[in-house]
Length: 533
Image (cartoon, rainbow, N blue to C red):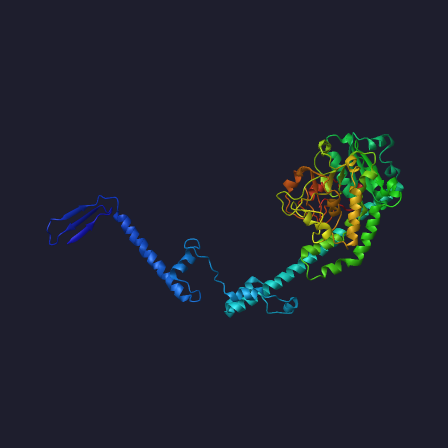
């Protein structure tokens, strides 16, 4: 008898043997059970049986786990299929070894520690070590790499601190040449502003800007970018405040490089009547601050020698030693109402900013009775720059801070601020600033990290009106993730941080945004070898 099945599995024919032509033909018409489906089902179950057999064999070999075949199948196929949690296949001894502490001096002078992943893998393959030896070698190698990385990072912070704290020879050269020009050239000693423009200094219909700086080149970039991008340059009044040593170079520069029709005023601190009468709290605080820092900080060597603190904490302490944070130019903004008693509103500018748009719309912002118009720094796409809250600056482990402020309250930025001086004079902001500076000195500088922003955050607490982030883009001086296109589209960019655009450590892709406002063909710029890059 012969059996014939059609390829479609729809017909089955049975033929008797010995040439007998009679046959039985069966036509399969039911679609409820398909022979093709039956055929593929048999193949699938055959494969499944082989798969289960392999898992069973593996299960029997791996006797330590003691899991059933179905349990191991669930572990292999996925924890959610059979309701079983995924267990780690890493031996427990590996975790124990990796969690054991290791002393720093334990690795010193050792030559048997692998120096790279490639060397580690080669040693493991050659020696065929057990799990414990594997973990010990891995821990030693990773710890050694961490120690070297930490040392390199701290050295980088130290070099950046030295580079940012020193005065580049090009800037020193510019000051000397301008001071010499001031003594030898009558054109460099012109009154600023000229007599006919003096009334504009107290005219509240003008747009008044205040810049405090002892850096001639930086001040020239701020002034040039401000006037060049203004829609109403004839209404721009820039009040430049400097110290006694920089006054003559600053006056010589702006006398020889006028920015008409804008009005430029250059004054040293000793030219202000308020500054010369009686005690000046900001100067007294600075003197005490210097004494405390010199007594307790121990200098950069002591900070770097600390083996327990994390690199970013060391970087913060090194930055606290920067002369900028103990400069009167940085603290003087808290006394603006006294310095400009006739003005109602000013925009204060740091000397490490670049203005890229017309700032006159700032005078149309309704401050709602607030004193300080500033950009918040706790919201934005850039988490490194725009994630600052009060806990980022103030020490909330100190009861004086924790009892008075909310650690999650949003911080704001110094550098480009609108100050309503009329509203300011009705508050005790300046007194509060000096009060908290005194408390910080009494507590060994333990209330906040560094600089003038932390006491400013306290003094202006409740007096800040938030403005659009377009007006102030931060972070161009301490991280290079900012793209050129994003920076170019901001109204004001701020090179806050160590990598100032006039230093060699500036980020090269961002420096052109600052350098475009310098005339490198100028005789003073050329003679001091100040270059675009």
